[in-house]
Every structure is written in structure tokens, then in C-alpha cells.
Image (cartoon, rainbow, N blue to C red):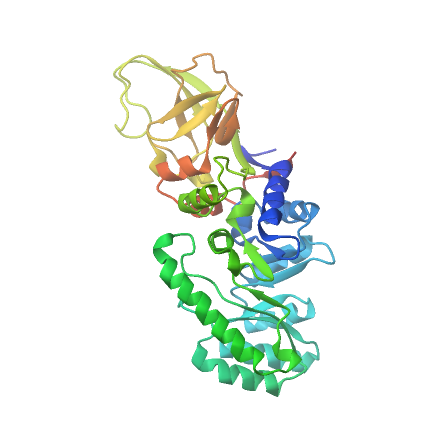
Length: 386
């Protein structure tokens, strides 16, 4: 495969997660699969067709380049929605390709409507409204100008949605702020409904990401934008605990779909009193047998895991010793000195009864699940397994 490690994506685990999500939101709510950040590190190229096999027909991306990648992969009846960056020079392509576009400022709205008028194809828009996140979103003071523009270009747009994004739905500490946002969103929707013209009525009202879909079920509305849940992770430990409590269960309903694997490159012995690897961070207190694994920080295995990381070999949890290098790491074989060159090494995933979870991996390297996953380099080969 011409690679030092590879990533496996489990189809059965993904189907399990979509089954759970469908039970959570019901059969009539659209489930938009969020695949920004190279499908949260899982790989757009493999993930999009796999998600479609599991029934997904709507994908959300951050930018036009991600939309371009999904467009090349998707089935004919699958829809794409750009939630973030798209330049004016890319808008015409999006309109001609029937890609849905978030509108979060007047400049983009004007540009999109003008291009749509010029090429005589309506632009599919989702109006993202500012409700308290203070990031992207049309402020309420600019709503009259939005109405003016929509009335000026009556046949140049299809109002696919009115949406917003919640600031911290994954933590109870943000409860008041999120509830205020929900109220603000409802007030904005009422302003659109007062216009009474059909073109001002969106096809979908949508506000819920993964965290909001769990913590605030009333926000699910017509569509949910699900990222981290589909990949097998609750947004935070807090949202997992809330779900378990609300449903009176101790069982996490999700399955991790990603495993990261390598192999033992070589094995050697080190005498007591010798330092291992760069510098003097690890001193062998006794004669040791070590394995070299050809994965380092250039491959996404954080240098902060030096002398802290764990891998699985032959069903045993084994320690990373010494400094994680650019292209390799060193493993203490004390727990099983019979390890051989070529043995499978699990960096993330399960082997026998043991597991190296993304959560434990992330805690050791001081990274969020989201950060760790999306930092997995795109050039690590991904393959789908059952």
C-alpha cells in the first residue's frame, strides 16, 4: 500500500450510528451529514459514498473546495450545502450545480442574487441569522435590507432554509445563552412569516448541530446538521451523561467508525543505563526490548505523547518511550517480549479486549476529539471495512 500506516472506516459501525440518529430525530427530519474537515479526518473520498449507502442524501461542508470534492463523489439526487466560505468567483459554479449556500451577510446576498439574475438560474440560499453566537449571521438590524433585496430579485432565489448556530449547546454552563438564542430565532422566523409571500417561507427551519439535537430536542425542526455523532462520538462527556440519564441506560449507543493501524518496523534490545531516542527523556533502568513503529508527528501522532502514549500490540497495552520523532515512535515490549517484526500495532481502535479510544488518545495529547481527528493527515490511506 506504500504507506507506514492506514485508517479503516467501519460500515457496520456507521450504519449503527445512523440507526441511532434516525430514532433520535424521527423519520421526517432531514439528516444532513457534516463532512467538513475531510469528514472529520475520516476521509471525504471514502466517507461520502459510504454514507450514501447508509441512506444519507444531504451533506454539509464548510467551503467551496469541500463542496467540489463531494460533488464529484455524490449520487445524482444527493444535495450539498456550503455553510462557510465561498468566493464570488465560485458562486456561479454553485448556482449552476444547484448547491445550497449559506447567506450570512448582505454582501454575499447581493452577489448571489446578481449572479442568479445574470445567468437566469435561481440561487439556493439558507439565511443564517445572528441570534447570539456573534460569529457568522445576519444581524436583526439588517433584516429589512434582506427583505428589500429579496423583493428586488423575486425570481432569482429559492429560500431553502432559515437557520442559526448555537453557542455552546454541548455544555449546561451555556444553558441561558442557548435558550436566549432559541427565543431570538423564533422572533426572526415570525418576521419572515409576517411577509406572507410564499417566497419568504423557507423549505426548512434548521438550527441543531449534534450537541443541540441531544441537549435541546425542540431544536431539531426540519433538518439537523450532524457531525461528530455520526462518527461515533458524543460532542462532550457532558452530553453523553445527559443522554444516558434521560434514557435511563448505561450503554453508549454509538460505535466508533475509525481505526488507525501500523506495524512493527524493527525490534532491538537496549542495555540498562542507556538513554532511548533523542535527548535524555527516557533512561532504561533495566535491560529492555523495544519495537520501532513507523509513525510519528508528521503522521498526526502528537509529539506531546512522548513517554505518555499507548498502543496495542498482540492484545496488550504498551507504552511509548522516548521522544516521538517526525516519522517513528519507540515502544516498550516489557508486557510481551515475543512481539515480532510485522506485528499489527493499533494506534486508535480495538484489538482483542483492549481499546485505544480517541478520547483517551486526545486527553493524553491535550486535544479535543474534533481536533485530533481532523489533524490526521489526508495522505494516510483510508479504506472501508465491514
